Image (cartoon, rainbow, N blue to C red; front, side):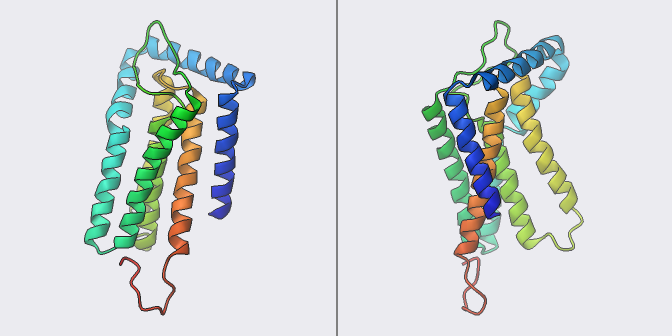
Length: 216
């Protein structure tokens, strides 16, 4: 977990620097992929409509935040107070990091004379990709802590989480509102935040025999 946090963090910083410096090879790849997918989106209105539903409703950041908030409430009712606070704090930190990095980089979104969707704020990193990564990562972590053993639905939830994280990234580029590197940046930052959340939770967890309850 520690190595994952370090690697994802370093890659996030590297990608941020390359984006901010307008590194030519990255700009070229971003534009080529974005142009090819936009052509497909314009030519396939039915598939584009499906992507908009998934992106703007199913995997929207507010949908993810609501899911995380519901998880926090469930944990609180189960008297897992410390875990609930950690998960809630991670969600708030995610939103703060998103806005801070967007303001720092100030990257413009793709511009199209025939757009199929629209979005506000700066492009890097993708809020959709980052929020989905953090939410799904935290949900898997919480489930693994308490309900993984003997639970047959674990594989289904894991697949759903992976599909959501990868799928929302696809929709943002396909709909022409993000460059591919925006999505990758969101994924990397999201993974880093999940790893940091888990590590800090473990480091402050009471040791067996102290007489303290983990959730309190």
